[in-house]
Every structure is written in structure tokens, then in C-alpha cells.
Image (cartoon, rainbow, N blue to C red; front, side, top):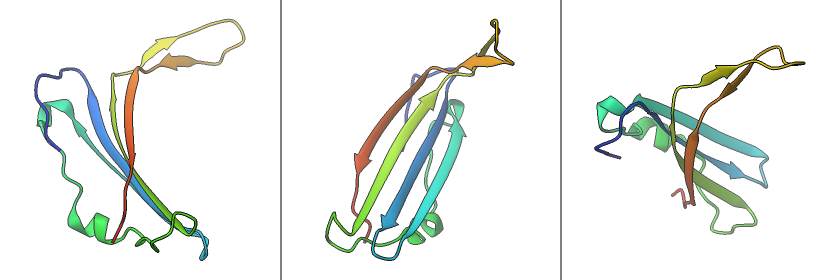
Length: 97
């Protein structure tokens, strides 16, 4: 994935798959600073995702692209600590082969 024109953000690609009959799952998170301009999920990571079974009842997989700003801290009555982190998330169901 590549991008241009963004500043002050962190970018991550999050994905995973689940095999329901075997009650097993896999998950990955790859992150980069927006200054990098690109992010590639290594082939070795993708190779370890559980393959689909051909039926949405038996297996599912999803990939999310996440962009977020650094957190802003705040305090308030009754809180030990607090932070706000504006985040944009875009997800898509995928097929793992």
C-alpha cells in the first residue's frame, strides 16, 4: 500500500482469518509512520493466514487499513487518565487461498 500527502499520522494494516470448524484463527498487525509513504505486509505473514474453506459459514477473513493521529491526553473527575485518538478505519472481507 502506498500513500502521499498525509502528515502526522500512523498507518497500520490489520488482518486475520478464522476457521470455524477447527476453532482456530490467525491475526497480524503491520504498522508504519506516514512519512514512510508505503507499507507492505511480508509474504511470510500472509502465508500464515488460515486458508478459506469456500463457505462463509466455515471460514472468514478480513483486512483493515487504519490511520490514526497521536493521542491527546485529557483528565476529568472520576478518571485515572484519558486520551482521544482520532482514527480512520476501512475494512474489507477477503478470501485467503
